[in-house]
Length: 49
Image (cartoon, rainbow, N blue to C red):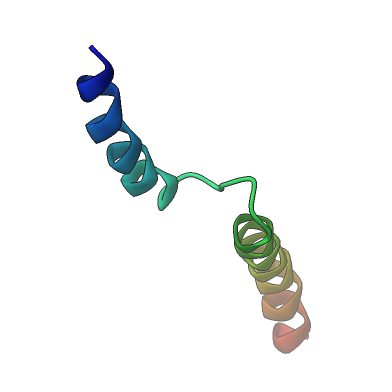
C-alpha cells in the first residue's frame, strides 16, 4: 500500500501546474493574471477616449 502512495506524489505535481501552488511562484502567477485582467479593461476604455 505504501508503494502506491509513492507514484501518487509525482502525479500531484503535474496537477500543481494548473492549480496555484502554495509556493511564491503560484502567488506571483495569480497576481500577474489578475493585474493583466484588471489592466486590460481600463486600457481599452482609455485608448478609445
